[in-house]
Image 1 (cartoon, each protein chain N blue to C red):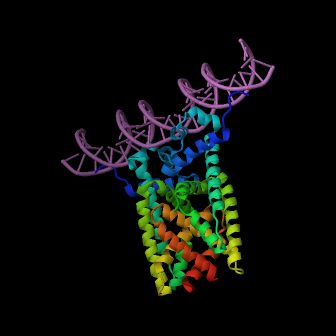
Image 2 (cartoon, chains in turn blue, red, green, cyan; image 1 turned 135 degrees about the horizontal axis):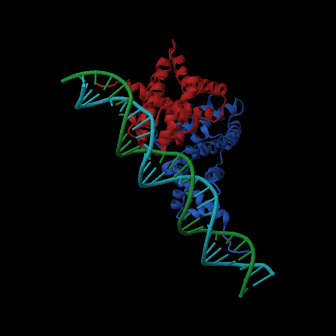
Image 3 (cartoon, chains in turn green, cyan, blue, purple; image 1 turned 30 degrees about the horizontal axis):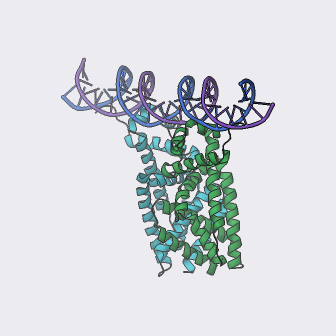
Length: 189
Length: 189
DNA sequence: TCGTTTGCAATGCGATTGCATTGGAGTTGG
DNA sequence: CCAACTCCAATGCAATCGCATTGCAAACGA
C-alpha cells in the first residue's frame, strides 16, 4: 500500500470549510475554488475527495446534521421537563456552536423547498425530533395530543431560530418566548 | 417625447418572472438570461429596466412583500378573533396565491441571514406584523403580554410555513395546529 | 530496485455568468 | 423633415463556473 492519509478526516476538513462558507455568505458562495481557498488546500484536493460539487454539498449537510444530533445527544438533565427545555434551546443560535451551525441549517432548509433530495433527509430528521419531543411531553404531561404539541413546538423553535438569525428577536427574548411556549404546552391543553 | 411604454408595468412583468424562477428553482437559478427567458423577453429588455441584477432581486423582494401585504389587507372578518385566525392562515401556503408566494418568501428569508440589506426591510415588515397581531390579541383578550404572544405566534407560523413547504406537515394539519396554538394564546396565559 | 498505487497540483476546456457597448427601429416636439 | 430621445435587440467581454485531464512525488510490496 502506498501513501495513506486519513480519508474521512480530509473530507471532514473540506466539509467544514463548506459549512463556514455557507454560514458566512450563503449557499451561492459555495464553489470548488472558494471551498479550496477557505479550507486552505488546492482545488485538486477538493476534487480528489469529492467527485462532484453536489456530493460535497450533501456531505456538508450530513456533517452539520450529525453535529446538531451530537449536540442534542450531549444534553443532560435530571428532570424530563428540563431536558425538553434544554433541547429546544439547543436548536436556537445561543451557544457558539449553535450560532455557527444555525445559518447553515437555515440555508439547507430553504434549499429543501426547491430541492427534493434535501427534503427527504430533512423530513426524516424532523420526524425523529417530533417523536422524541412527543415522548418527552407525554412523560411530563400524560394525556392530550402530545404529537400535535410536539409538531407545534418544533415549528415554533424553527421559526424562532430564523427570527433570531435575522436579528428580529434578541437571544434573551427567544429564551423567554421558549419558556412561555413550553409552559403553555405543559400546563394548559 | 419619443416612444413611451408603461415603465412600472414592464418592471412588474420582469419581477414576476423572477419570483416564478425563485419559487420553482431557488435564488441561485436567477440569472439575467433565465429571467429574460421566463418573462418571454430579450435580455436587453431586462437590462434596460434594471441596471443590475441586485436591483432586480430587491425589486422582486418588494414586489412579493407588497403582494403579501395586499393579501393581508384583503382579509375581512366580523369577529376580531376570526380576523386574527384568517391572517395567520394567510401566511401559510394554503391558497394558490400563498402557495406561489411562500417559496419566494422562504428563499428571501434564508438569504437575509447572510445579506443584511434584505434583513432590514424584513425586520420592519415583521415588526409591523407583530404590532398588528399584538393589537388584535389585546382586542380579543385584554391583559397579558400581547407583544410576547404576537412574537410567538409569528415565529410559529413562520416555522410552520417552512414545514408545510418541505412537505413535513400537510396543509390540513397546519390549520389544525394554528387553531390549537391560537386557542392556547387566547384562553390560557 | 523497481513497478504499482495513492494523493494530489496544475492546467485546460466549454459553458455560463453579469455587465458594457453598439446600433437601430420607432415616436415625437420643433 | 429632422434632430432628439426612448426602447430594446444583439453582440462582445472578462470573469467564473464545474469538471476532465495530465503528470508527478511519495510510499510501499515484490
